[in-house]
Image (tube, helix red, strand yellow):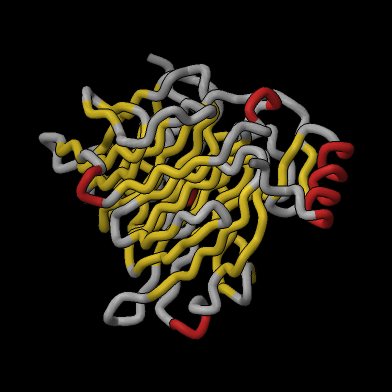
Length: 301
């Protein structure tokens, strides 16, 4: 098995979205070639209700799929097709916008005012951009968990892990979306299909995402579980790790353990034309979407 090298490590960018929601942008609205088929990811974590309760009022989507994963609090949602509901802790919604949908998402805190969730945007190929919209709402108790002998816990949101398959299916990007918790000091090797783009996003604790052998000529400043590690390669809270090619990753959990999302998907390799929540292949298609919004034909029968 070949270990995927780390291509890039980056932090998040504080951002205002919707009607004034304070969140942290992990990536997005730039060069999508490195994360293809994924376009954008936001971490909307906050303990101050006044910074998120205004939410994301009615807005359009076309040409993409949005994946909302909630860890604390809840997100009430409704759309132009008459769907509505609430996503509670541990639940996920996979929305295929396809030809067009208008929806809103309104976050609410828990009893302590805490709100935490993620939204990931996945691109649709040209052949599916105008497909009929659909929802998959999955309650937390229906997301399978795998508990390893070393204490690692993996929630399988979509894709498969050691015989357990996530409940979200029929997604164009054929993604694997895992919520991984590793105890302090544990070193883990996780296989990933070699043809997929892959990244990790750390949101609790800290970890190293490189082969844990000593790099030649590099000062080693820490040792965990017998593995020498360069402290400068440590990835902590709100850190994205973008991987290069290979068929597995190696992660070494730090003194506090770590929890991260591990996301991979098959690249689409098509042109991207982008206008806010509408993503098509050409500027002409974006112009047509804007015209559809103005003349009332955005929602297809």
